Length: 131
Image 1 (cartoon, rainbow, N blue to C red):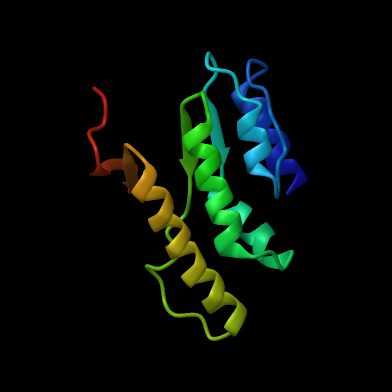
Image 2: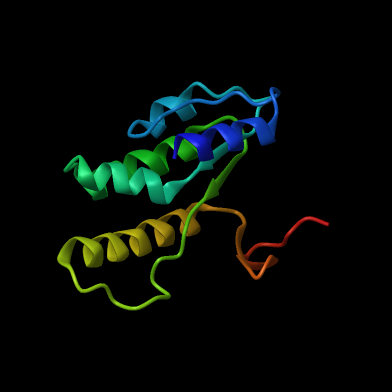
């Protein structure tokens, strides 16, 4: 994982500012400036961290959604669709899959644009992809 992160950081260059916020995205979003763009990579990992920490997922999701509404910068959120595969055999994996679906629905509800990418092709589910 360290090698993967290092490669990712090299690939994106030095113009990026990275904020590590494995649990507290609302604070990170509150520090964004209007002239910046924010990339959350990714909501799936944030949810995993919340779940494994034993946090109240509905409360954490509401805090995230509120912070997105209050953020003065444009925000892009990367998330995974985990519900398209088989139903996992263990309870934690099933809970994660269900919670990820709820989180994605909640984020999509408040987003202006929702895009899925399949086979490298973007498909707008909500809104219009700018030309």
